[in-house]
Length: 186
Image (cartoon, rainbow, N blue to C red):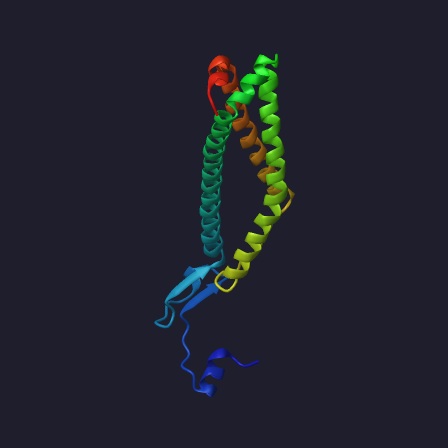
């Protein structure tokens, strides 16, 4: 087997070592004008560990932002739907439905919409991730790793946000003024 420097000389290529990565401690490598940087295995592992910690923090920030955005958007949509349906809800109250029963009806409708969203959203999300991975594959070494925990956390967070927003909107049902709601013209 030929050494790299000899092969470079034979081919007429200027040879120089710009960086050294070694199992030895970087202090054990003698200084040279050709070597601009030295890193040992421990230093590489430490820098990779800090990189992963930063990425984990970014993912947590994105998840928190997504949950907050989901709550705000779903709450606004729920309130708009509630205002548009206040006449129907007041009619149900006049017919003898209790606020709790109407609240459960509103929450169950929200849960069914969430089920549809999860069934359509998971495959769409996986497709987008595969597309992003293909687009970034030339720039980074990335591997898509989705397991049961990823799916479970996503589904549980989605249902949690949906139930929270449904509960917040259904609480408004207790304060509905039946006479005013039924008087309003559509």
